[in-house]
Length: 326
Image 1 (tube, helix red, strand yellow):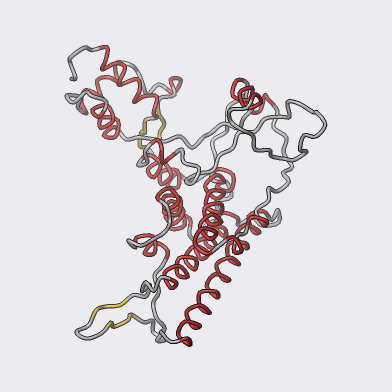
Image 2: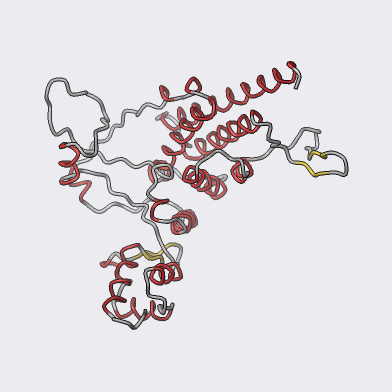
């Protein structure tokens, strides 16, 4: 490869990284701006651009073709727009590439946001800003981790990812009380429920899929302790054990949801191979499991979904039945 060709590749890679970082920083800035009301939609679109340029820069640095083409008899025939420009891979195609450097849980986060973007196009849904903030946070952290790993720490955006000051004070009564249902359109709730329900327990709880934090009021006030909004502590330390025993936390409302067929599969996987869908129906009816007070499931867009405790309950009932389902 000629020196001129190498300079061309390096120059375009730097341009792509510059655009990528700018899009990511703008996404974070918009989300943290109290004057912006169109947060979720703007954040998602800008982060999709940031990730796309990041992966384009990576593929270019590895000389992996990221333009659409058809293989002709002698050479590649590239797809072009009406104006004659090359058609480059969109983010979803970048993620599907066998050489994609994004780790599996970070991919899940991006696939969720891509699907969410399709669902919320052309409409304002302010409730999503708080409801899905853990997934936006994970997207930003994943981006920062990947740009450092792929191109070096000098491209990191850590210093721009500070926690914003919030004008909110949660009382113990507020946290302990019932959480109001987020004002989100039913079809968006259905999308979230179906996507979450398709994940394994480990995938759903990965901090690369959704970044969740437990918060506790300051327990001690001794000289030398950092006076910061958030402190990271050793999970095995004495203070962490105290927090585990009497934590003060905003409750998680995005619980994984399962269809009846999913419940049956999990019960069968637990060793009850004779368990069928009609057995499941008999169990929930006999247990009155759809009673709202039991908390075993919920209705989303007129479709009933089960929570994980119901799966555990089914397994316990199967065990109690002896050899009936084995």
